[in-house]
Length: 83
Length: 180
Image (cartoon, rainbow over all chains, first blue to last red; front, side, top):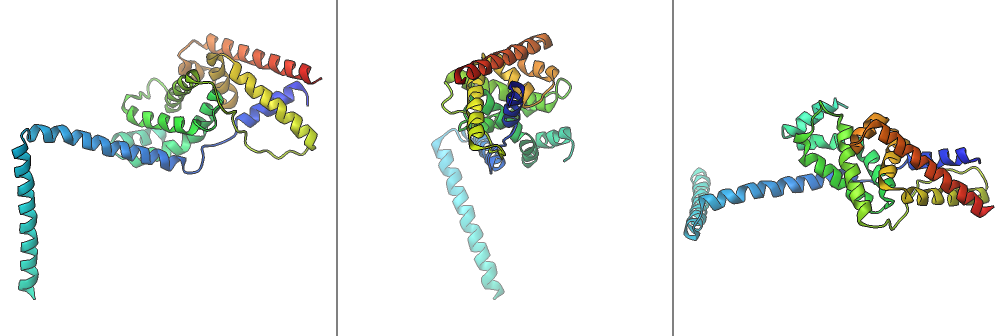
């Protein structure tokens, strides 16, 4: 093998090779994680802005719980009245 | 595959999953380029992932009127590879893909030694020569595109590649002198 052949063979070898299996999936998973984090980051200041006081947060929590309970009761009522 | 610019527009419009098409197209060249510049076959995939994540985040700043997407992506990859190469000495030589060798074991061993010597010589080159050489000789990019990626004039790219070639030829001469 002369010098030019060695050089060409080496270059050909270095031009080969691909990313490992699952590389694209890992990149896309990273992007989805980032998107989820960004969505949470966008929501956090909104919550802080809307609910500056602890009692307001507690009130929202209680209201949410009551609404949930009301929905359960309404569903039960529907099911029982139908049967 | 649909036109690259269409894919980019879809991603910018909120279709994150379309970005997969761009990753699939450029995963090989970007990973290979980073591996050849850093000499680190283990960390190159992590760096390549960072490149694609950065590209996704900054996709809105990509201007198709100024460059092709591949040029823009290689610029990100080049900068990350250079930063990584500056931070640390390469711990691993790049793992070359297996190739069928029709010659005998002695010739194969000699070639393997020669290639290892060439790898060492490549990593000994100054970074700006190394990146230009890798982009030109391994990724077969035109010099104009390399000039955009490196942010230098065309003449500077040519000069860097010529100096890299001369350095590698000298390394090969020295290696042949050592074994004879």
